[in-house]
Length: 220
Image (cartoon, rainbow, N blue to C red):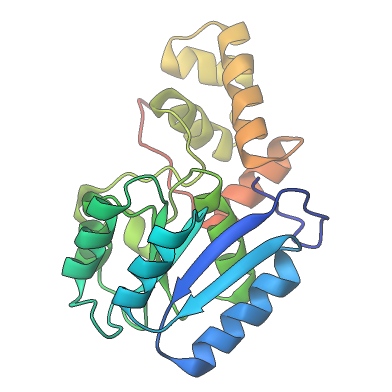
């Protein structure tokens, strides 16, 4: 589940595979996961072949792959992994990133692109989004190349409603803008709250901003 109070007690065991050959980053991410995701089972490997062996041996809720680790060959390794293990959500991590890199990762089927420069809180929240079935892209890359990313698994219409909600519009105003009945808007807002794991509009806006959610543009 997506949680923005990262000290909240977790109930479901999250099986995570981390494939990275940089010891300092690996230890930092291990500590972050242990701190923010109470119930987790973390498997660490240092090359793509070892990652594939681990994925064949057991199920993972999330695989985090370094774009440039041994055997990865950049995006070729991402492509091979997604083709061989289509049921496993994959997040790509890299010490550097461009809008083109991010767009390519998402187009291949990755559920997120995580620069190693992300702050610990944002990185922890992003991992939870991806493991919960959403997609995460940092704000500065989300609009590159015309991409429209909904980081919490929102539908097209929910993303449009969230866009207007983030502008401070009321349900009635959102309904007029999108040509929807007010009760329909309320249902969309309720679904947005559920998917973002928040209780009100202020928390929804803060959560979306914190995670770098870029809603799909709708009518204005």
